[in-house]
Length: 487
Ligand SMILES: [Ca+2]
Ligand SMILES: [Ca+2]
Image 1 (cartoon, rainbow, N blue to C red):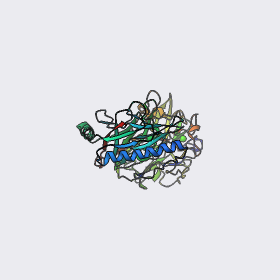
Image 2 (image 1 turned 120 degrees about the vertical axis):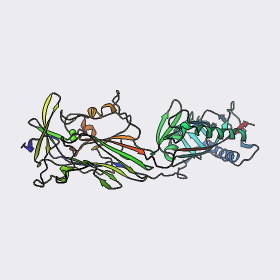
Image 3 (image 1 turned 180 degrees about the vertical axis):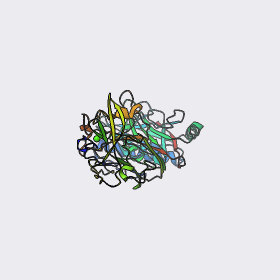
Image 4 (image 1 turned 90 degrees about the horizontal axis):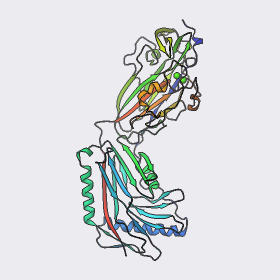
């Protein structure tokens, strides 16, 4: 029997409980809760905002009330505006350019003395600020359960130069044609049952403010392009799934999940032997613990030993798939145990970096030895420094394994790492790195040798939208084309 006291590092005083949580949030609709900024900056700006709001409501009347005839938008001597036609609202299904709706929004812009602007665009009123742009009043865009509803005004044609008087007329024929195009575009077979949707505002001076609006009312992953003055948000069937570096997950729909334990590397060595401390896992679905591994644990063994995955006699990788309903909370919990008083059993030998080791696992003691208890307990609903979450595109940290015979992250993650050292995952996947032996771990401290090393357990978590689950993405854009003319 080996001397336990000599087993080094990760085995002496091992434990840990790491929770990983996928929190579910129901969709929050922010209608009416978007705070209107205090716009009392200066009179010039205030007046411009007021007249732009008036133009907004007049344009809505023209666009939706089927009023024929002209409506005067601006008429005051000091109300000079320009009309631009560059900004567009674009929706793409399935990342497929063939499934794309592209509608010109256009903008009516009032330039202030200090060079800033106030504008009507896409049914909202916007202004530039020293920092970028902000929303004055929101457009009518709604997003709920995969459906974008966007009754909007599409301004046709730019006007050369400034004008003091602007009138608007609905172009009924053009509006019908636009509606037909939108329907036709999205009813193509390639666009049916879309798995994802990208909502974009292009070529807008107010794209930063549109992005903030999307964050509140649409969600998803924002991408900004400053050169193209563009913001996009990417929505998957699961809603916003992973936020890089966070253990929080939003699950909006019925889902299937899969948990893969890719590796466990919690061990210490003494006299050519590697001692493996027990690690147990559970998956919690709405607080209900499932212990899926091993599928048929030895009924006569101690529970901790029976469910120990850090056992060189057992397979390296473990997988568990399950279904859940929208609104579920899911967490993956890893627990390591003190192993100092274990009785140990020799197993096979392993060759690592040119050296041969005996791999030694805790022996089932039939209760003759007390288990040594847990050492670290982590509240799975909070971000814990003993857990690192990586998503697609994240750089794989250069953590060094605690001992040379352990597998490092590069070996464990293998072909999931690209040549730039970044993780390549699907958007609905994340990798969890657990530090299960150092109670005071920080990722910063993992760069050198020894603990912490964050390879004690490595888990791949994946969410899929359930096949049977409800709604596909839908887009309803009622884009009324309004012709604005000078005079
Ligand atoms: Ca460790
Ligand atoms: Ca380790």
